[in-house]
Length: 314
Image (tube, rainbow, N blue to C red; front, side, top):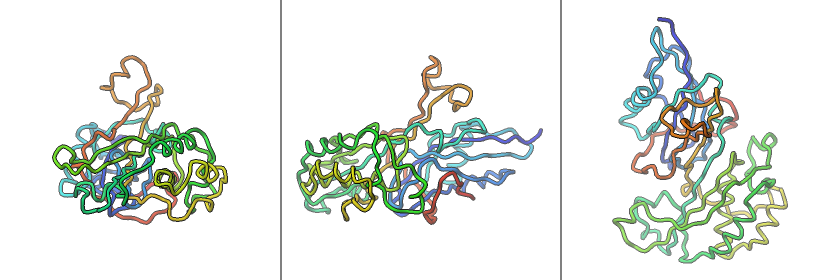
């Protein structure tokens, strides 16, 4: 039997409190014949979490047929059984598929807890939300400000300066920006009447630290430290130095919750149990925020650089 190369798309989740970029070394234990490189769809900053990130890689077995999707997923997780990382899905894809460039949208969720004393925040939430020392936010003003950011704009004022700055197009389309009530992860068992709020951002792509800056700006509006009009002036400035210092939201409240892919015929991801495939409608591969945070992940820290289309190599 000759060796055949197979490309897989995997979805995975993790708690990013201590980590920066992702490398799944357990794939090497499958003894591939080829050199394996992992291409991650969405870079997350140190401290940012993910309920659903994705990546693709090629795998070639010596004189054996390619792994089935279920066996590959289970095999990777077996080698990670003592670590805090979990692959939730594996999908066989065409060899020209790219996890980053073929992603149709990404959704981030930012969690905010209101309370004067951090010790009142349940342990399950303490490193998974931004605890504000206030009991009220002006939600109407925050939603007014969110409406200003929604749509297509030059978001230069909302990106941090890094090595990607000269190469990234600052014009992005925010398909969704929502401000809505949230809850503690243990709300059914732990009652402290602590208000939680969730800020949701959906776009095909984001600039470096754009989501954290937008979340911080919306919270500043809610606290009366920035008006919606002032926020619009920052947006219209199209200058990263125009963003007020100290307003960026901390990393630990941010979650990547969705990376979506669309089925467009022969180049589509092969996922036969998706009902929309049977009706020839666009097929979206989604792992949403309903995934349980009880599954945590072990990541390997690496330096943060220009990931672009460059792989993270084993």
